[in-house]
Length: 499
Image 1 (spheres, rainbow, N blue to C red):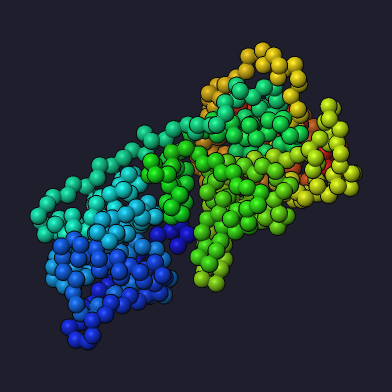
Image 2 (spheres, one colour; image 1 turned 180 degrees about the vertical axis):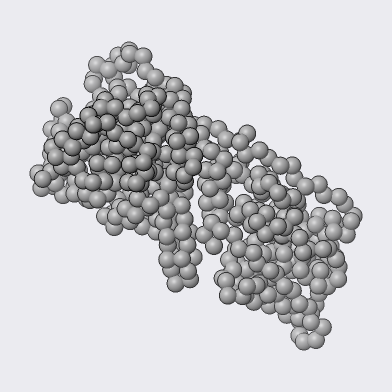
């Protein structure tokens, strides 16, 4: 239910009287109903006897809708126990997994939340498919038995074979720095945009890039994962839970060890971006939790889809309410948005003239509402690259992603120490009250901000965003206090609003 696992008791009754039947009750969906055929075949193909009696399976509590194939293994086990073929002690054990027709156990979604639930409820052992072993082995305090088939489990309980619990895995040893499609050293020119990207990564600030086609906006965005800080253990678990319940864990990995990078197409629906459906599932913003959500061609997204981003950008979570219930998914993402200045893309370009009418340009730019733009911390123009730099390859020595990532990681470490007694992870997560507590300003800084609010027509939200960006700039520089230089640079990344 959302990211929270719920314990379901599988009760099996085999009646001697009545016609042979196999009934599952307890609000099962189609996948649970079809488990009858999988369980029947799996038991027969494992060398056990399937009872020709009236079988009733109850999934309790009965008022919670049951979905998915994870009930196959406990149903099969319940039938074998009720028919007297095995007699294990199950009071301290949890069983979870999808069966194939030959009795093998397939990969099953949601193992990580279930392993944590087993630990919370004081269960000593959890039995899961072997392919999910690594996913559950990072959870301390519960013994994980990874089995490859129903036959192996039957033999184990009949003491024909021995099964050893899976070795525990240290999550910290798995975490690595995110790799990227491009290195920052490959980006020619665009020094201001690269600096803005560094600040965005260091403080988890949303960033909006506007520039002509081919200026390097997409390349910069796809290079961003290479400078992001390494996931913490807590963050890695949060992300892995989301990917576990949605079945999005990569085949070669059982744990998400790098910050996610999601790039939905501009034709994505509101449900695809935010989440939802009859049985609410996470959308792109939750799959980008603790990572990057890259929205290329930002104005091309439908207006109602963009407006749905408002609340998650502010609250870092999204609540989806449907007739069947309400679920909350985390959505703390770094938004990277890219846009052309007009439909043809060359408005304001010194080399190519724009072919759009003024009214068309105005309507295009207004596709992104003021409230959305105001929620984006950093705004930066990405001009076309000078021809000479392209031809010569820009002979100036360019920093690679590794050096920038080191500065970003140091800045994040400073923030971790600063916010260690709070739930805040980075400067970008600070509320108005937190800004007042953690970002004291000198009289000079206050005077500059007062002048900027008037001359740039900044909103109250923008005022505090400037302070948060300045705090990040100071962290990158290794400065303890915010100075007037940091405020001045932060103001460059705010758009001047028209009266």
